[in-house]
Image (cartoon, rainbow over all chains, first blue to last red; front, side, top):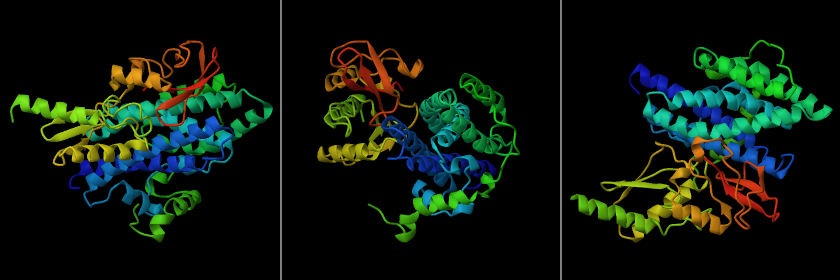
Amino acid sequence: MTDKNENQLFHHALRLGDDALILGQRLSEWCGHAPMLEVDLALANIGLDLIGQATHFLNLAGEIEGEGRDADALAFHRDVLDFRNCLLVEQPNGDFAQTIARQFLFSNWQELLMQEIAAAPEPRLSAIGAKAAKEIAYHAKFAGEWVVRLGDGTEESRARMIAGLDWMWRFVDELFDARDGAPSHRPEWDARIAHALAEANLELPKPRRGAMGGRAGHHSEHLGHLLAEMQFLQRAYPGATW
Amino acid sequence: MSAVAELSLKDRIFEILSQVPDPEIPCISVVDLGIVRDVRGQTLVITPTYTGCPATIAIGNDIRAALDRAGLSHIEIETTLSPPWTTDWISDEGLAKLRDYGIAPPPRGAAKHSLRGTAAKCPRCGSLHTEEISRFGSTPCKALHRCLDCREPFDRFKCH
């Protein structure tokens, strides 16, 4: 990794890979626990897509870095301070509505970002972006439909959807942070979110001071617990393969 | 190497790999599925269907083993993501095999249209009177549908 551009590309790929990896791991926690079988399959499939995307992005990051690290090394042999994912993806699943809120906010952002990356000049990044964008379109649609179903559902589901969105909303600003996010996508993202919430008969959550820091390695307490489980095997038996 | 010899190597490799089934949908070969893309020089170019498809590694291993068995262990395998795979890469024969197997094939050009595409045709009774139960099915590439006439549930290959 020699010049500034390569260094930027490394960090870019790392952020994208970490976002996908951590959310994929979070979603896998639902496996066997979702409210019904179809939702269980959907959440597991979305998690699988994200882990697949993470593999591509982290392999690319390792390739650019040129120190022999691949996706597995980056996923399993880094500690919490070295992860560059946004705070949103590491938030606990909470109840089903909170998980849906997180997915709804994230997938709509990730889809816009991947569409941009797919059209970008860097061929290795754009190839992954083009592939990912098609998968994420399904994720955004799934989450958006559940926001409407829960928000415009029973008193109970509505209250939970509002609480879930309210909890996750503080992590939105970080997605659009000018230093490394994609602030230009904010208007379209806002429009998508507003459209779905209107259909769900929900109001936009109240503005909150945005929580930041994930991109600099300053994570919430939750990430360490997630990594403890995800990395257990490689920590106990370094280099184990099967 | 002459163009004729190149062509025959490519034909030979495609012929060999047309006997390698997809591990999750064994009715269809990796060639029919559009995973096997090209032969350039001594390199076979393949592409994954879905980034998270757990069968990707198994498919790579199966292709390697088939080439080795045919005495083509010198052929390198290269994976490319671009242009991304879509369901339009599935051959006509592949679509027919999916239908016979009980999986409603994706409509042509689906990637360019909406995620749901047109109404799914029941692979058992042929009815178009069907509904989607879940957009995510037993594998990343399938969605779950139900026929409202014969009442049977069925998988549909997702438009992608």
